[in-house]
Length: 287
Image 1 (cartoon, rainbow, N blue to C red):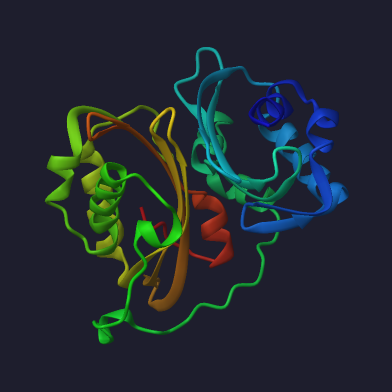
Image 2 (spheres, rainbow, N blue to C red; image 1 turned 90 degrees about the horizontal axis):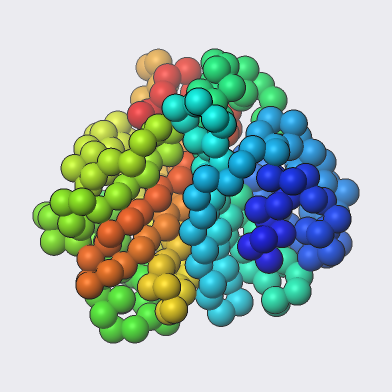
């Protein structure tokens, strides 16, 4: 399945991946959900027009039980930026049931040397979204989902994941120094190069300081026991002040972690920032 996804974008091989698509398959990309082969194929063709046939520069796979995830980067010779594309999907080894795709659209704009607004206009109309106004800070006794609620993990991995999740949900910034090495490689959406955990910590602070009533929610976790890698689907809800108007927003995230010796040695954090901007009609960027 991983090779089928990669070769769709690097070679334009639609036939190979089409064999894994059902009439009921849901493919979500740019906050828009396509159903069935015809709608999904339209998404593929638009993607190929924008960033197809670029060479593969890097890949990370996460093979779980019933769920799998894939992260890869495409690059252009003599270009500073590479383009990251990530997938989290449910399958039965032969067919894809549901798939979430996140394209780093900020990197795509830089790769094409276009303004983000030009790319944004080409994106599909996002699905309708109704966000709850429930304020979790007013209900401190409410139960908040943890990694073990969504995925069975070995004890040591569950401990690392719990610390990682507490960084985001509980804003426990002290865990950065204990979870990451000084040479851990972090790749943030829209960033041209890898960075260290200090930059990830700065990203965390900027994000939460720009959102009021921010709340992080887990959606799903996929664990590969052979490679000690994980993929996490999650999102952040919050109130964002955009040119004087307060908007309730949701930022879908996908994170990939590689663990060695009880440390996170590699992490990719993926966000489709231009789709997010289009969905909520924002005039100013959060990050």
